[in-house]
Image (cartoon, rainbow, N blue to C red; front, side, top):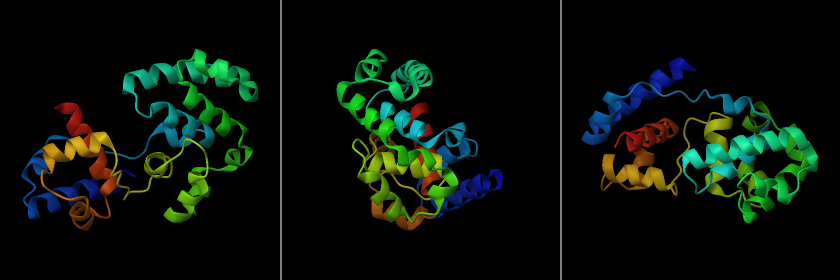
Length: 198
């Protein structure tokens, strides 16, 4: 995994220099290689989905606080969790409904990073999009951080789009695809880090 990270970083540096993406090239030189290897992909899949839903449209710190409370409730009550329990952790009513649906979806329990890697991107999307509360952004996060797909691009992500304005101004998503495939997941991670540093 470390070798893949180095190869990706080297590729991004080379492409940003060749295409005169000066701000991005400067950012890449200022940060270390970025790994996709996270403890999240060792988590049970349905819990990963719940954690991802918790993090939608809230700050990182708020998501962490809610998840810490929620994780304790899920461990204690397991399948006997109610909407009231979820709301007590700070989850909105809408998200609580989504989370309860995921908890009750027994077919998700058998999925692992290895089983999900066997799906094509379109088949994975078809599998997950039918679950209430899961859209393209969540599916992208699953591909990035649960199955370590190296070429995911979250076109609708607010953080990515803000960072593009700083580090890749006037560049279209199509141009990014042409120039930075097959390592757009790594590019996304660097752009998020760049946003944090600004």
